[in-house]
Amino acid sequence: MPFNAGIHKTRRIITKHPCTMSEGRPAPTASPLAAASIRAHQRMWLVGLVAGVAVLLACAGEPARLALRYERLAVLDHAQLWRLVTGHLVHAGPAHLLLNMAGLGLIAALFPRDYSVRQWLIVLVASIATIDAGFVLFEPQLQWYVGLSGVLHGALAAGAIAWWRHESRVLALALIAILMLKLGWEQWQGALPFSGDMTVIVAAHLYGAIGGAAAGLLIWQISRRWPAEPASL
Image (tube, rainbow, N blue to C red):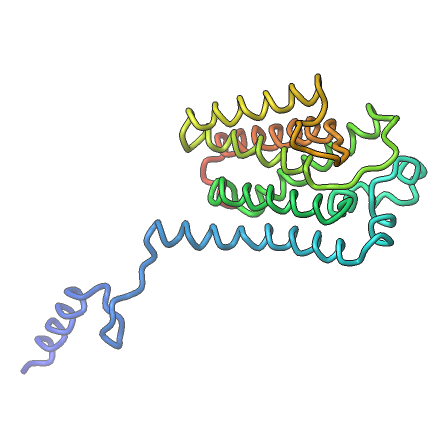
C-alpha cells in the first residue's frame, strides 16, 4: 500500500470515530441531569457544615451557649462582636435545636438546585446581617438571643424568589403568601400556637426574611445583568 494511501485511511478511521478513546471506550459525557445532581451534592456540604457546627455547640452545653449567644451589652461594648454570628448557631435546648435542624432539612429539600454554594452564602450573610442590625437598632429590650430560625426564614424568602425566577410561579406565590401570613400573624399575635413553651423572638423571623429576600433580589439582578455569570456566584 502506498504511504499516502495509508495516511488517508488512518484519517478516515479517526474521523469516523471522533468520540472514541484510545482504549476503544466512548469518551465520557455528562448529561445535564447528572451535572445538576453533582451541583446539588456540592451544595449539601454547606447544610452539613451548619448542622454539624450547631450540633457540636449543643453538645458543649451551657458554657458554650453563654459564651456564644447574642448579648446586646457585650456587642455594644465592641468587645465580643463574634456573638453577632455565633448567636445564630447555638440553641436554647435539644427541642429548639431539633426544630431548627428540621427547618434546615426542609430548606435543603425544597431548594436543592436553586442557588449555588456561593449564592447560598450570600443569602446566609445577608440574613444574619439584617437580623443583627434589626436587633441592635430596633430591639433595645432584647438582651440576648439564640437560634437559627431567623436565618431559615431568610432562606425561605430567597427560595421563593428563586422559584419565581425559574420554577413554578404558582408555587412561588403560594410560598410567599404562607410566609407573609406567618410573619403577619407573629407581628400582631405573637408566636404561632404550636410553638409551645419556647420563647420565640418573632422579630428575628421578620428581619431574616427581609435580608433573605434582599439577597435573592440582588442575585436575580446580577444574573440578569451578567447572564453568563450566575454559575460563578
